Image 1 (cartoon, helix red, strand yellow):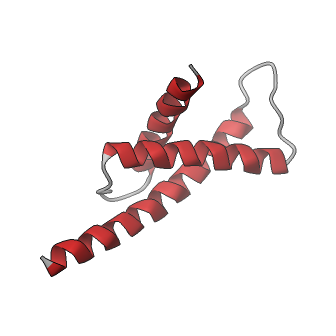
Image 2 (spheres, helix red, strand yellow; image 1 turned 90 degrees about the vertical axis):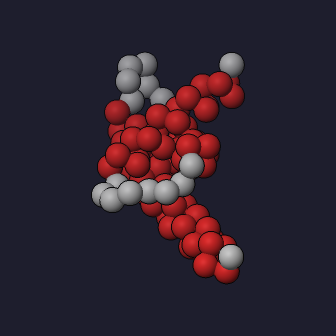
Length: 92
């Protein structure tokens, strides 16, 4: 069940990050989900570094770190994806 939740959270974070970033992102949905999963992991690590631990209620500060990390990873990952795909299409 842990992997299913990781995929669902990754999908939601990835789509949320795509909605926040201005302009069009060209990465496919599976890659956006992976970027979102990475954003969740990195956001949790950053939150832990700032001393935010799990709480009994909704941990809004941890979720904010996750969204910010997901936005950065989706932006950078999409840029790398487009530079790779663009070079491949240009050669063909």
